[in-house]
Length: 168
Image (cartoon, rainbow, N blue to C red):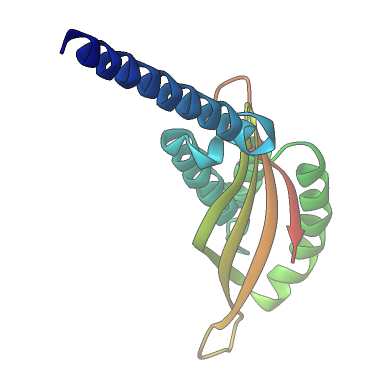
């Protein structure tokens, strides 16, 4: 009977080692390569942080009141960087020329934002924005929707700045 017990113990030990090896191999396979580098798949806190900060930034820089453009300008200065800042400056200059005559008020609301990639201090997002515009003499606001491919970078202060906006 002692020999049979030894065989059972050895068989159980071998099975445990094989199961552990297979589990380790699957872990390494899942965490290596491009998918393993994308923290958007596993870092809920980091993903939520970039999502919310980018949504706030877009709402602030895409909201505009002809009577007081200063909040929009200040938001763009602090929340946009790189290519997004220069592209926005061009758009903002054209808006400032037309808006006072039309008494234009734009209000932006992010309806959904999803992080497609999060790697270190860089993120890519798909963002859905609803923007309403109201001009003097109009009874109702005109509402339009946009899909944007957005890239963002974490600044030295730790906040996320939009570095690229591309309409889809």
